[in-house]
Length: 168
Image (cartoon, rainbow, N blue to C red; front, side, top):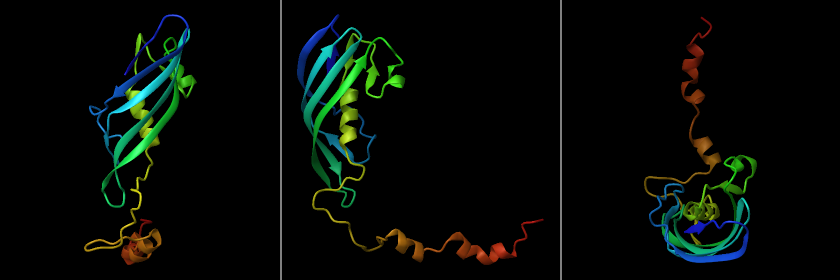
């Protein structure tokens, strides 16, 4: 999706478009397995050196459950505001929510992808999924159980360390 930057001040502009991000590599988040095409509406105002945008849309993403490794659909409702400056290339160092774009067009696809990533939880769990119990060839342990079952390096080699004279 591209926004064309108009000369001068233009208020209350709206652009609605179908977005397909299937060509973007999904390596930024290991749980994200796919993004279905979605419709986004961008309301924007163009000022002398700034474009203020309000982005709205619903996105269905395919995620992988951290417990079961099953893929499932997850709906994201985007309602975000972004600011673009096309005069000051250092604006990103000065302001957290404003980005530099040289213009005369702004490609919103990378920004839409970043917004989608910001809505995905760090630990994705499919609704209704439970933490698996121990099985054949593996065991699920709490940190306390792990600490009691696995000796430390000092426990295994304690006698050897005692025999070494490290002062020489």
